[in-house]
Image (cartoon, rainbow, N blue to C red; front, side, top):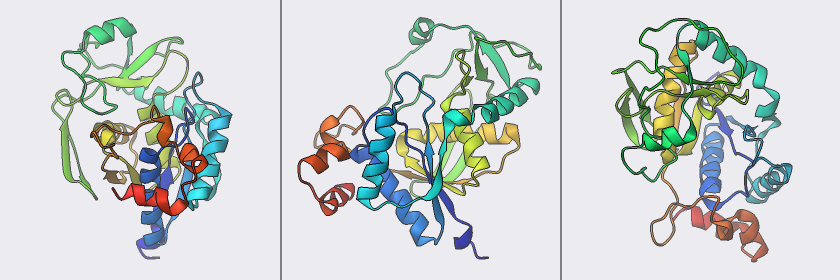
Length: 273
């Protein structure tokens, strides 16, 4: 078996809105990379936001992917059906001293932000307000948020297949981050790492706004003893003013563009801008 036959990619949409041009462009890149390497592309429904995730968005996303010609290998993985796997991984982190409880409120966390966010989905460096001085195994309590204790000064480096060498330092570029929520669900970071490993993913294709998330996930992989994966971060799709396209841009949802008469070829041409 050659290296190409071992390629496993994935699409990981969140059903919290209609598929828009920005994410569709990344999905198209993931599809093309899997095709070029004679690999497979898996689909994961990241529906761990119970307030915003809706079945209608899942249905629309599946229809839009088919319209774009993006093929994937069934069955679709649904994260809300896999919580026990994430909980097992979290309890391991807790037992080995990698996680601790955090009682900070949303308001307190907001006040800790020292500077405006970059144009990413990143979070500010945590101040360490709830961080214990000594690393120790802790017992689990329901209804509590838990953070991953990053090894301060440790560097998470990786060579991105699109953007080259990337390096981020724990405690400086990012701080302790959430791994388990008080509502009994995992954070994006933990669920992503557990699923990528369980699905046998060999390359993650996603937007450049998640570069620091990759660094965090590398630390989680190390803590859980999971294999590393390769990464390809795509440049963000922006409008004429240079603003990043996101789900709030309803006019650029694939569904809306289709309804306005755009052909598949027209939408694919937008990805190349």
